[in-house]
Length: 186
Image (cartoon, rainbow, N blue to C red; front, side, top):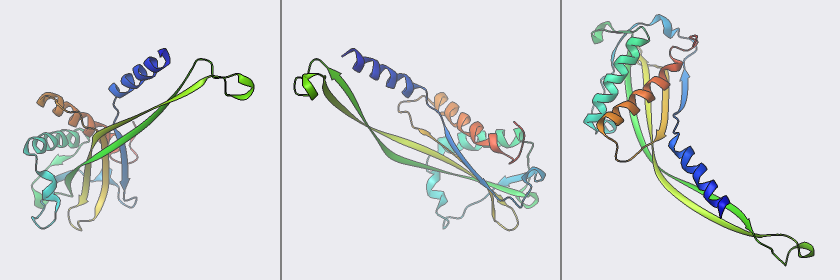
């Protein structure tokens, strides 16, 4: 019983320490550090990406956070016709399931080899949760070719305040932009 309690305490402790997993990809033929002028990529109603921006509150949080990160990276927002790169983001929410089985032994078990051993009990727990992914695209303003893509995923926590949501978005953006521009020294 004590082993079960300790196992669950460890799981709860780890569950509280959420971390953002990130992934990056970019065009190696382009020196992104030289491209300093940016603006938003305007999407058409036919592109499908407008469907991802249904949450106006998070749209504002993400856009403000992106502007801060781009400024921190040395980029300047200019009118669209002067931009070297265009920036867009997408969001995605997926339902996930985590299945864990814990084995515990207890007491004397007479039917094992030579009558020695302990009984084994399996306890399986199923945890359903939502995972949110934020994808940032940086596109060549002239050719519209994708130059850089950064993505961050994390568990969506229910019941958060607006300030906590803003903080989580800012942390995700900061983590994603640790790899921008490619090759920068940390």
